[in-house]
Length: 96
Image (cartoon, rainbow, N blue to C red):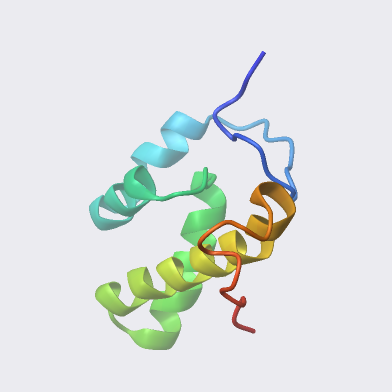
């Protein structure tokens, strides 16, 4: 049966918690970000990354931009493996 994760070479982890309850516990801005994200983030993972970015930047807006950067890097690492060198984003290098 197909999943909502699509085709990816990125690591997947088994999750046994209640994702909907965890999602509902996220701040409003973060729920909106997850809803429009390109990758299927787990609420626990996105919360951890957001909290880390928020502690560094002290700004919700900058923390959300950091999540955008993290997601772009994850996609950049995956694009050549999945879609090949002809994909428009294949030339983008992941930031380190």
